[in-house]
Amino acid sequence: MKNDIQSEAYLRMLKIRGFEQAVKQLVTEGEVPGAVHSSVGQEAAIVGACMALADDDYISGTHRSHGHPIGKGAQLKPLMAEILGKVTGVCKGRGGSMHFTDTSVGSIGESAIVGGGIPIATGAALTAQVKGTGQVALTFFGDGASNEGVLAECLNMAAVWKLPVIFFCENNGYAAVTPAKDSHGQPDVARRAEGYGVPGVIVDGQDFDAVYAATQTAVARARAGEGPTLIEAKTYRFDEHCVGLFINGAYRPAEEIAHFMSERDPVTLYRNLLLDGDKSEGDLSEIEAMADGLIQEAVSFAKESAYPDPEEAFELVHANPISIRR
Image (cartoon, rainbow, N blue to C red; front, side):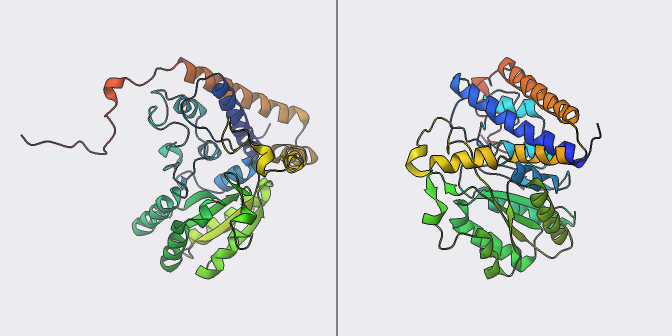
């Protein structure tokens, strides 16, 4: 089997799907501290965006960000260990589900603060511009975060200074339980780019190829010194806002959820596309088995890892030790 872009994209989508499913199971087993937000249904948007970036490009995420470092190529074991609060996690068990940081793949921070990753990525883009490294930063955020003032501030600054940053909105239609139609004056987040003189692109978030192509264009523009792009991927989350929160009937029609799960599943859509191309059932089964094995290894690794020592609770709080003069 060739290790091509299509095979790698399918593998990363499967790793995200399997990772999220494993985490949900661990939540039911009482293994996971804190809240957990699943990105099942949004795999094509995540992987399409991340695979258009170079290895040393930056990404920042959201509270729903297990998939983002996976999409960028991160190892699963330390990510799963972080979910369980173990010392072998990417943040040594200090961050948990909503605060992955994995600089080995350019993931510079995820945050429970809505819109919190937007200024971090904008700052990273400014750093790259000043240093002349040629790097690009991409910040993921949701439709809810698009109503935060920080997006307007960062879009404007990035447009004026032509920063190499991509603003990537994963518009899954709902900010927690609030439908976008009830909180947006008009439904297309990408149109906000017009006010800042930068391109605004709407793309089918369930289509890996469409997202990948749109992000490639934005990356090329950013690297050429032409400034930012706002990409809006129309996608859908299959699970509740938070794992264990069961209020579907109150704000999401059951037929809407069923439609996306049966007809707009990005993993199934991409699998069918590959079968229509040059991939065989054997090729895809091999990739699927690989993903399953990696997930099982990650869960075992996380469960077997130790918790941080309580005596070390105040370590890693500051970037530099604070010396006290006596």
